[in-house]
Length: 75
Image 1 (cartoon, rainbow, N blue to C red):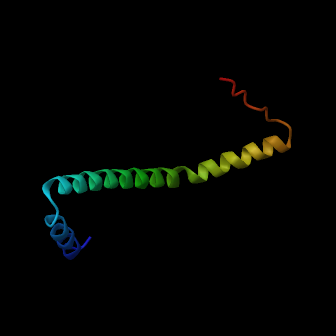
Image 2: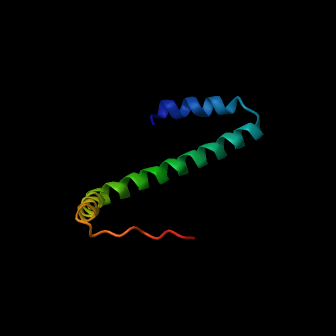
Image 3: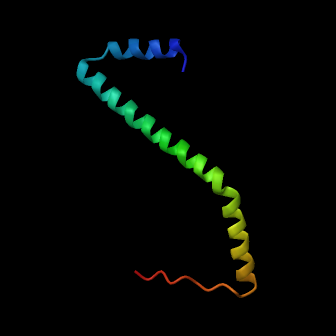
């Protein structure tokens, strides 16, 4: 984010009452935390994507060959 964009956001927030500013700050903190989680998830998925594809192909092949057994998901 550019310094100009940050300045604009700060100026906008300064027009709000203190309690509203606190709400905006809390919202932004949560929003950024969620974005960081998503970025970590995307990065982890990219690291394992080829392995997941390989395992899915193997599972599909084993099902086609009759070598796979259904999972028992009873709770």
